[in-house]
Length: 428
Ligand SMILES: Cc1ncc(COP(=O)(O)O)c(C=O)c1O
Image 1 (cartoon, rainbow, N blue to C red):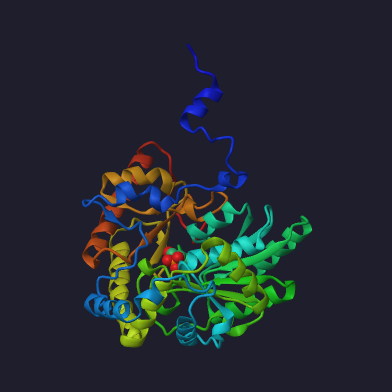
Image 2: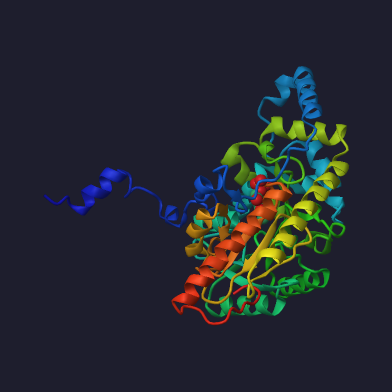
């Protein structure tokens, strides 16, 4: 006896007809979907983006937090204001000063990681169908948030110097011609996740000039700026324009993500909306975490700690670049990041990184396929390789296994006449 379709659906999920239409855009993060394979001990995972925080002074942090609870437990374990605690907002202004930002603590709101700041900004600006311009490729978590608010995401090409101003202009003009309102440009100028690309200072000026000409708000997402490996921190877009840039920051990569403390620095009228959005979302950001980070910043040489992180990531980045140089077949290209966590690889024409991931798993290596970082299905020849977490030896071994995977694929494809001579260019 056949079961009516409706009944089958109902048995799987009885609420299927009740969900809001925005849930249709929500899908599991590609990175999370890979967890089952990537977390197996025999697999070298070049997939995850977890910071390596084993070097943190855990004994110092433990005793500072213990003292804090003894001295002020009832206050720090209570509710706080939606904007966040004054003390940490002042300290954050000093942190942002390292990237040339002059800001007042009044212009800042604390969020539950910068991911929540991204959510607050999107919920504040986006009606279904509004256009968000974003780099191609772009952070998968941002694309997920944009999809959840039913934005129409238009991705704008990048080259080695970051977002291409002419492409930004063309995308803006096209959106307007189609009668769509561009609500903001989302950019990760420092060591873009996933490409590792750094926007040059000249490009920053040019991109801002286009944004100013068209009156487009810029959302600058900057979790990796202080993790520059080969150069000092670069001037933030917000340091060049105070009125049209919302800057998102985070302690996740420079301290520890478990505290879930990030922030948004925004022009006053926008900030007021973000505070209202925060009240309705969480009442207030986590008070305990804010105090814990404040104490850490006061009692520890946090800049020295960031320097240690930078040295550690340099060693890992170098291991990855050495491994790619030694093991990748001809026709494969990759970016050479000067900071952050990621290398972006481009496979020869005809290759598909989604299809290749099962073969990679059989060689005990994992990566994130490039399609995760595009809203429109592009990226099939790309993969994101992260060097933040495994040891340098494991990273090098991971690239060896990846090389093996690609060579096996090339051999098979050549045998069956599926590919011509390997060629590759940056991106798609
Ligand atoms: C570009 C970018 N933005 C935002 C986030 C979110 O970070 P968090 O919410 O931990 O501050 C991440 C995390 O990996 C990221 O890579």
